[in-house]
Amino acid sequence: MCIALWALDYQDYALILCSNRDEFLSRPTQDAHFHNFEDVNEAGSAEGNVLSGRDVIAGGTWFGVTRTGKVALLHVSDYVRTNITEPVKAYEMSRGYLTSSILLSDSSESLEDQVGRIVPQDARFAGFNLLLLAPSAPRPDGSLHFDPLFVTNHGSGGIVTSRPLSTRERFCGCVSNAIDGLKDDWPKVQQATEKFNDVLQTLSTGTTEAEFTDRLFDVLAWRSPEPVTQRSQLRNTVQVAPVPITLEGVPNVGSNSYGTRLSTILFIKKSGHAVFIERDIWKLVDGQAVRADPGSQRIFHFQVKPQ
Image (cartoon, rainbow, N blue to C red; front, side):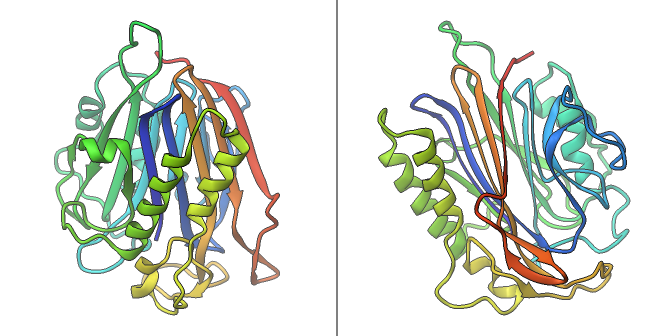
């Protein structure tokens, strides 16, 4: 049960975004790298336009950014239950199609128009929440800013709709796996939002990038005092220590341990300088869930060049 937090146009930053990816530890995944969504069996290219990890089974991604500054972040959702991952072949179209299609598009259309073009009117997906960001028209001073769009189907099989972010969401936004608009913030969302806001308030010109990064990873590391032992409790903790979960219709690929696999931070300054850090949290070693070495991470620096 993933979570993401963000802030737009905050001090020197056009975008501050941090996210946890919660997933079965045995699900085949490629580390973040530059690519163009080639076949997952092919090596990515250092000259690729998309930076993201990749889901080997479906071929898509849960979170990616392009060299032109477009961002797509996908979380699953369901109205009736916590839909950690969609049953196999429940829907003809994969949610990963949404992220890959948006990130691969070089259209100058608005995000809303791109979504309308990419998603067929009769398309049905398993439940999802999708945050999209794209650079807006340049400001007179040349600084970078983003236009956001929130896309959702309000649970499995629902009609795909989109909306802009509210003023509050632009300043300190958060999304997890809940249905958009229910006004029922989960404990993990409440805790993460409060801690993320505290970090933003302490950010100053004297704060180093390393200090800021550590504080954001601390936000993503918060765990409920009460141990999580079943699916219904995943909404209570930001970081999920591995817990055994079995889902009907989902192939067993070696282990039913489910937990926070990755924490990722993305900074994009108004100057266009971007920093992407993907850190391993929990992993499988010889079939056992173990905490990853804190130094097990991938760091990328690049300059965003809007179209």
